[in-house]
Image 1 (cartoon, rainbow, N blue to C red):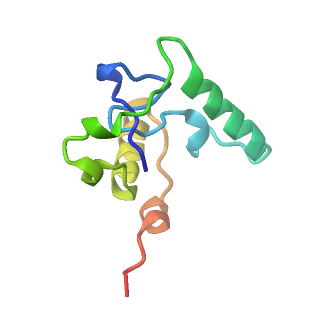
Image 2: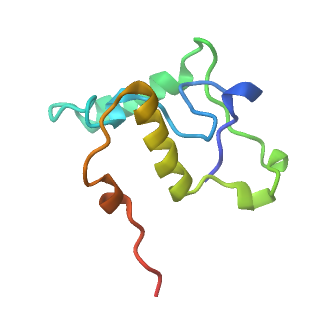
Length: 106
């Protein structure tokens, strides 16, 4: 659950300030049923390694404001995905909230 270095602090690679990967292939609008998992992973790897403007980098653990409490969690990832969709005009699936709902802990 490491956090990517925010773009404003020297990060890159199509990673948002919160650490989400911003790529159309991860959305309903950009997904094709003929796309293989290998193709998706390759596209993400290429985006994260892109040197235009710079590649993604992990934030050094000791720079977390709250230590491990600042690791990248599920709820934050869901919210970042929704923000990226809104910014780019991508469609959020109608059942997205139900799909990502966490099971109650017993």
